[in-house]
Image (cartoon, rainbow, N blue to C red; front, side, top):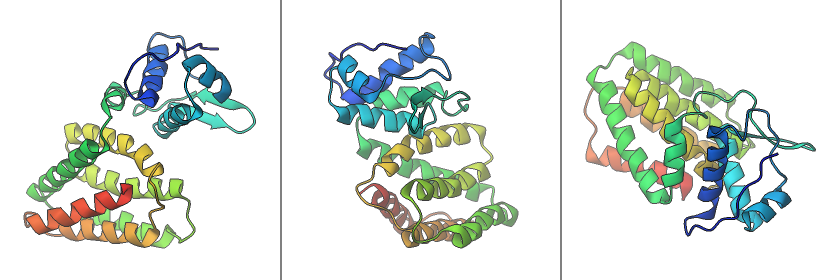
Length: 230
């Protein structure tokens, strides 16, 4: 079982914990399927309270690096996805001190993403996004868990991302949303189904024409993004 060093950096503690686990993965001290120390052991090894340990584990769980098995403990995922092993995600996780900067980056990126779709617009492409939205209207229920709601919300944005048909944009977009995911899970409030569907409907309406986005429309998109994390 891996042993970690006590933290001595002035950086955010949960970020430093993620950094050490990343280093252990890269140098082979941790491998897929390996069991992590218990929460109590991690507290002792890192010399911190439970709060940064839980923040770090939640982040790593959200991007598919760590799997928690009830009654057994915490494990490195046996079959990590290409997304969870993406070095760009790890690098940005370590830089991710400012939530405001991440929100700002996502907002500008989504405007660019929509402009790309509009520059090569077709009804067939938009129909695929519309189908995802119609399916969500049928499957989203009021008592859905936050975890499931986040997953469904991101499915819609991934559908928009794929419609750009731009490999560079898709790779960067996936990274942005994977970084955003744990922030959504840790949001101070539960974002309800009605607001999620309203936001998706608005995005779909914006994409339903070739017309460039107006500043008013961009401001409305920004408002929806901020409400998720607020």
